[in-house]
Length: 156
Image 1 (spheres, rainbow, N blue to C red):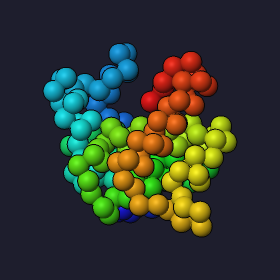
Image 2: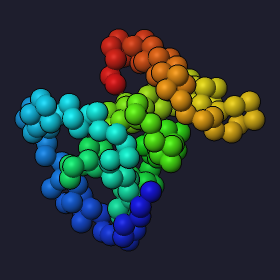
Image 3: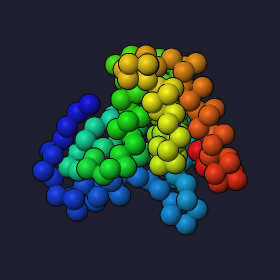
């Protein structure tokens, strides 16, 4: 993962993020056509720019910032998602949409003390398991089941 200007002021980084979101605040969605939105969601992770800029971890595709999260936050679940999804091993199923959903799933299960990260994504010795689509689907299935029980609907 690239590191761009770790000491960049917070205000500068936030201005960059806001300028590259292409977000319609009124309708709470990207200003993209249906075709563009689908293409962005299905973008392979190796085609995305994932980097730290200032105090933020940023996920960008086609010059649009799709996700950002404070690196120094104790709730930096995007960093965990990137670690477990293993960017060094590209696969067709590893898409922008799935990375963001995976981040949300990790967040949901960790803040609610489900233990799925340790019991599903790690082996009996505590080592990270190799991420496969089957392992990803298993984790997401249980995380979404918990999400449904906790919120009464799926939020990711």
